[in-house]
Image (cartoon, rainbow, N blue to C red; front, side, top):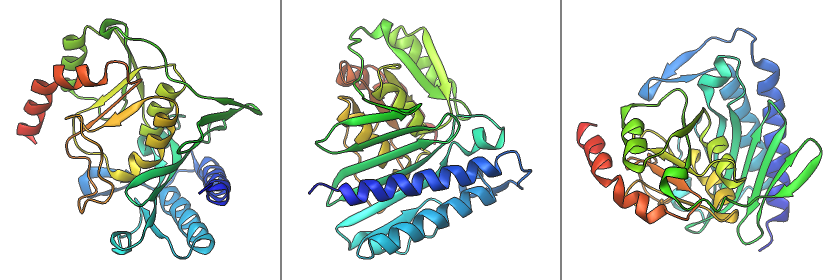
Length: 275
């Protein structure tokens, strides 16, 4: 299973959607609020339609699930499921910043199989297919990605949320002795920074992200040698009825992943009790 056609299609659609939303950024789009008090704009919806229609035409036997479209239930019965976040990091998009991306992931059976993350501002394209490595195309050049070799907790370079950072992240930093933190909006871009070796750790204990936030980026991170689990260290179940990552997320270069899970368990438990 090469997934060459699937990768080419996902790349083309991500680029087209990215160009669309980039053209709309700063156009004074009305900002609405949906469930969970999350922002959404016309750019989110138009990009979603573009990608959903493109994937449905190309692969009519597959289920297609987008953050900006109702779940029709077909993902439960189809072997292949596409998951899309047309604008991951909408707050950054609204503020006119560059920390947002268009993300497409493909699940085959129970396994993440393909990931595309496109950052319109900067024209950065992250891609991966399981078993074939992860790559970044930037400024006309493509390079293979590999996570860092950092293996001391106090040396870890954390990347954390820009719009949703809470006090639990400060507690995680203190428990691990981390002093270096960068704040970025998109989950896909956070995991991309770890995949390329520029960052080493992402922790989100809030439980507000969804499966479409992680499917594509997970393939990229894993193919670069990193790991993504929930905050309890368990694999993410993309076939679950509940699409929310309620037990949070930990993404890392893999060197200290299990130790980090164990060390921050009391913090994660405290966050869970307050939700």
